[in-house]
Image (cartoon, helix red, strand yellow):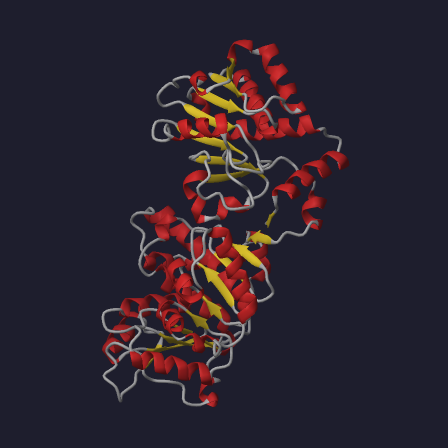
Length: 512
């Protein structure tokens, strides 16, 4: 799914109007109908609803929603926020329609003193400012935003299209904007919705269809995308009848240290459950029995000449030995002892195929910048935000961090995924994808170790590094969604994510 900029979204509206028998006012009505339908289906409309409407087309949406709710017998009141001297044509048309049918449900806000005391537990709908905003909200609008935000704990706040004051394509840090529990937007994610800095502003995002012209969507390039099921199905490769374990590759997983063998177990299990043919685990001697008992399908390698209780000492001594493995994953629970740093350096000198580096492998790279140059081209790095910062430096906001992510992926010819609610995935070709599967229950120890195992497994099975990254992150999140549905977000663990991987493959395989 493409992520269009605000100008592109406006052009999509205009293109639809030019190429279909629909006017701009009728397109606004479709947006209002879709929003009203969502409000009714989610039982929001059974409460008193107060709709704050601006002077532009976002306000027109709000006025139309008020009329449609009143048609259904709902207690809906519209409040016109006079932040501008002039209304848009479609806002004015919907104002006149509401005035004609429900004049008693129209109110005006010229100053903050006009803002009423809303009924406790009622719903507030924000339709003040839309995506056309080009500068921070100020004056009456900024004061109103601040007043509404103070009601966050007392009312359900729903933004139409985008929370007022939020910039769609640039950072809004330190700028006033509505804090919504839900955002009802149309057709596409906006970049702002996917940024951690806006989590408290957009709440839960719901995309509603209003029938924008498919030709515009198909033929208009977008810099960013959100992976969707259709894209993932196109990547996924079902198994062929005469396949054997050698078909699906041999992974070397280098993980674990004293007290952190759980990371190795989680990563190994997910690697196998994601479909790898053979798995060898390089682990410390202290974890030998743990792996053999917990993951009996895996082979174990330990370094007999070291105590190996806290670090990885063994290295692949020759390129010939390195070629035994179709893919290598390194980092979960590894530790950062001096011997481990030395061994990682030697591994990078001998292994020249794409590999997966996570956790402590990334921490080692951040302290030894020269080692980064040895990472094989097209390898996959899986940092969380702090690891990313240690590797590549601080940024002032999430937009700058995305630009840095893309720049480093291109500059270093690596695939870099930045973990988060909407994990951002950059590739050497300059493309950037966001992942929308997953849930807050996955914010639990070991979840990243599971992801490392999945991606390394897919890489060994013959997926390209980019495919392994996109598919791996998607099914990791989807498995987390299944786990949350079964166990709740609070009770689910990283091991639950791994156990639901089978369900994700069944879903992808269905109807092929």
